[in-house]
Image (cartoon, rainbow, N blue to C red; front, side):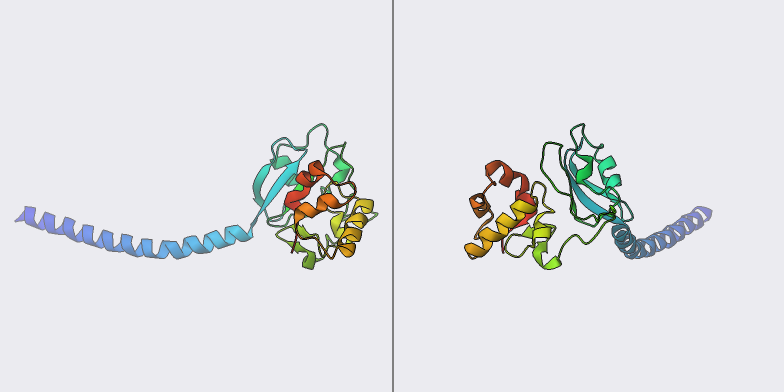
Amino acid sequence: MEAETSYTDISALSTSSSQKSSKDLSERPAQSKTEATDTQREQVTVDVKGAVTKPGVYTLKASSRVTDAIKAAGGMTEDADTKSVNLAASLLDEEVIYVASKDENVSVVGQSDSGAASDKGGKTSQKDGKINLNTATSEELQTISGIGAKRAEDIIAYRESHGGFQSVDDLKNVSGIGDKTLEKIRESIYVA
């Protein structure tokens, strides 16, 4: 009879343990979802491109700066133009960080004369970090790598004289923008 009692005791323990285990498992998904949501709020994902050692998509702490994203991408290459990017700027989720090379003609927008970060442009002309060629201001266009004040004004003049852009490829009709330039900036622009 002792063997039977032992068997019953083990069975009771097993049942009790499996019930507890099921209860624990049913509670865990709710905790995991909360933890995942908190983790997502604590992180930003950015796309680092241009004159960096390892261009790519990186996930960093939400409090990170552009300098942290560039470090994550292996740092700047020797031909990087350190003046083309504001290293102190805070990161935004889904942001593209482009480090120009020294041979690219870029003007830095997003900085005041003191070097402090300023407004990056109107939200009505941007979608997923891309700039709408049909609504962008000169300042917004100048945030695109390779587009300076003169080229931005040429884009606006073309847009006004032709009733807007029908496609991104229409940008090749603007003086000074050819296939090579268009391919460099294609991921930064759209037409709506």
